Length: 215
Image (tube, rainbow, N blue to C red; front, side, top):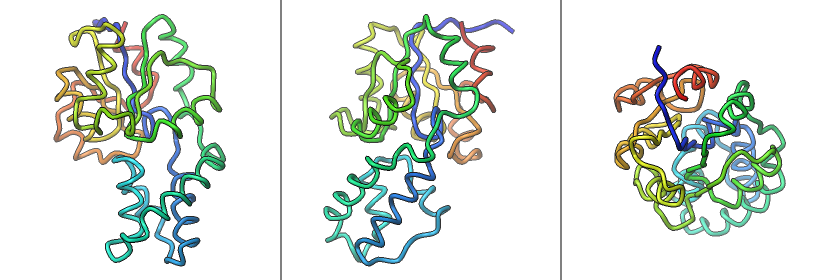
């Protein structure tokens, strides 16, 4: 197999690099209980993840409780910052893959708040990423292309030699909206059928396969 040369690898975070859904779900249910609202099934919360914390909490509190959204946001933020590393870790195979690409410029583009992103990546260390953009950095949320275009500009990388690795339709559509190729991952939180319908350029089942695809 001929490997594709890349000069910039942009990674989604939740469901792509890190298994974080348990800490997110626990923090959401803690928030709901604190507000006197019923907890939600864990699997339902997993389905809310991917469009940033504000949408996550709006869905969690429910249509009839939107007036309490700001309160929910404060409770969630305080709790999640304390507990975002309780069970969160890199997926198996991520760290050797990142080491393999030590000489390649790497970045994070996540709809997650940059505050949580920094705490998690600093806690997991060592630092592999030269650029990090979160959903609250002012470049819009994927599938909008803004954060991806900003990272490429900062890195001085061409679209032809940039790839995005992600686990959701937001990633695939965002990458294509930015004019770059996308590698979808099958081990994260994304819906496989929906991802395949978005026609990613590659589809892998484990992180180590990136080493077989790119140089």
